[in-house]
Length: 520
Image 1 (cartoon, rainbow, N blue to C red):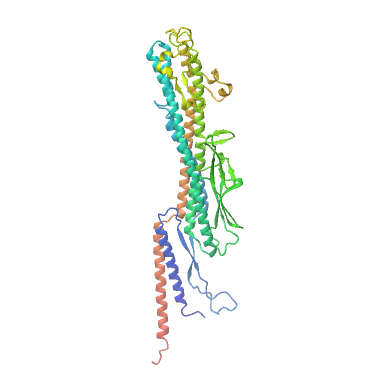
Image 2: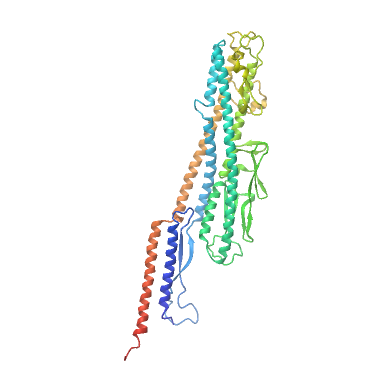
């Protein structure tokens, strides 16, 4: 037979459960603007009805409900949207780093503009044309020497500025590696905290949020695959427990490396296995990245890596197959190659000419430079800057004022193909194409295309990441309108349960004080 006080217990359960729902609603409202917070809800569950199923059940018609209880406090989150967001976040990190570094390169090269190398070379060629028309004119000779030095200064500026930016990017690579290690250590710490709570049947939702927020940050730095692992011996963990995170670095297409490269290892058999620290390996000679040491494994496949770290390494430069790869090393190499070829051929023509009124060939180099680093060191021969009459404009002995043949050869170098340069070896010629003007235009054109491509990919990735994040927020974020509605709903349910207690109390009052008074 059911208890007379059963109604009180049912109403009490209703009040407690609605109270818990109100507390959870308040928690949601309080964290409406907390980054990474996932809204929570109370899973209401009916309590066991009376009587329970059994051979000795009381003989009353049907089962009578006994109220409600708060089952679990669950996060409202869609793991598939997390996966989509992190994939786009990784691309955004990569293209963001590439776009920023290429934009800086474009700003340094500053083409097309009046101050760029193209414009400076144009002035130099024009000065040589003027010299070929007025070989005896001291002013025209001074202009040739001065504009030649402008060309050299521009190349020096390009090289030094690009090197400084490259050095800054190298420092950023170090910072990002430290950031990855710090995030991995924090996730590992949270893994351990979660592992100490879940086996007792609790769901540490706030720890889950904190861990997912860190994984979001990690996904921007490097492409990761997150696997949730629930160990075999995990106590009384609930089925919806998120478990431990096993995190490994994967390729751009999401496939694992062989063997897998793990940042955080967790298995069903052993639970938390440990973490691997990322260390940067650099060449002592060039300073370029030669590999990433992750745990005991050395990683050198930078072209398959994604994320901001990959974008920075691909900009800063790395060594692969004995040569330097990357945006900045390749640009510096192109400048060095072009400068060396141009200066060698120009010198070859110049030193075989005759200065004004000279009876012997000049023998002077117009440009001086260090073979190991021509773009950084090139300059006009100081003798020519001090005395421009030594510029070898003539091609015949005597250096007559009307002899402009050598000056014309120098001016014609503008359109001369590298393949026709007599001062270059076949190997040097094979690495160049076209004339100096067309070669430089090609460098700038390729830089523009690469930069635009990176910006376009960044924009596309940002749009997709933003779209996925909006979908994710529509599921997980706190809606104040919805929470306010829930608050009213739970409040009225709480009040109704309290009123139910009053009704039952009046019933009991009737039984206790109103019954058995016949004959009084």
